[in-house]
Image (cartoon, rainbow over all chains, first blue to last red; front, side, top):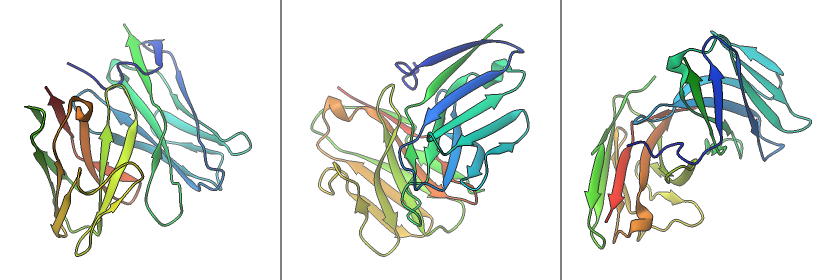
Length: 113
Length: 112
């Protein structure tokens, strides 16, 4: 059975709608941010990243927005599909040069048919 | 990006025993990272493992409880020692890639 995401905040979205997942990060000195997707029984997988000198970055169906003023990161998924159902984590780079990423609490995305 | 093989994928262990988790990478990497993911929680870094030196542990994690080996640039092991039910978690190894980490598929440990 699945234990990942069991007690995490859940976002339920209708298939085809857009999803917005939010994340507050802790360190104003962090200069690199990543969104990961974790499906049941798997390790986290890289989705998209952004550096602190950018406000927005787009990938295929995904967009990451960075607001450094309020230390906020968001992931937008366009035309959400059933395969998008997973737990999503943001990560910040923490102390520069250490490669020690600090992970956010995670959000479980449920796509409704 | 690197491909990581982690085993076992899951195990159920008796309290007081130890389990060694193996992580094999298909390319040479300098640093390997071990994370713990408790049920319904996010990922917490246990330690950073560099080849040829002792692992660096994060606050709250000690070598006696989580000994780590790093015999070469493609392999590492994490041992969970003297297990208790509180050690029930998913344990993940990861390596730094061009964009953040690449993770193994994790070891789902249940201690009874």
